[in-house]
Image (cartoon, rainbow, N blue to C red; front, side, top):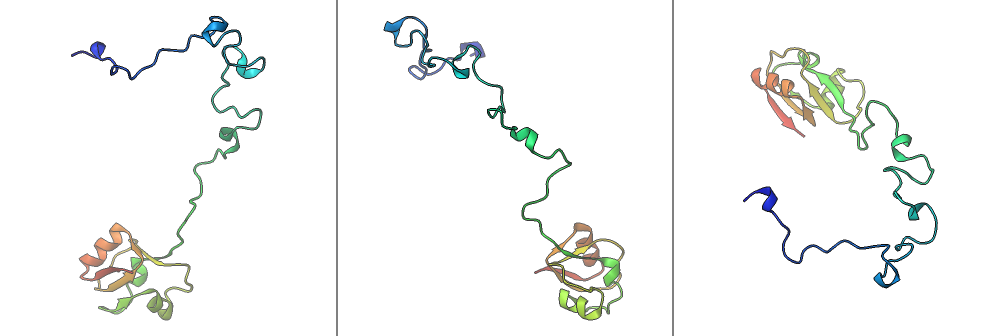
Length: 147
């Protein structure tokens, strides 16, 4: 079978509407497009994106490098070198970091970033971890817990 042999299923297609062939054919004279106006003319559809003279959507949108996220999540971020000074095998949470003075304010859920090195084992409880941070904590003998 070739692509040229492919035909639609029997009865699945209708023949095209023959317009402008007299009043008896049902679509004579104005061919169902009405008397006058933009939509009755030949070559009649307006260009894609035309909104009747209103500034179209593609011109109303900002031409900047991206759009702000609708449900943007704000995290309190901390790097590994910031928690390096804590005692070994201690539990790192948002409350413990605020208590220790490492963080000064709570800007949302805690996210641990992989900046710096970690040589002590810690139990870190946070809302999110970067891949490098998680790998470094596990390599140092600690554990990562997503809260």
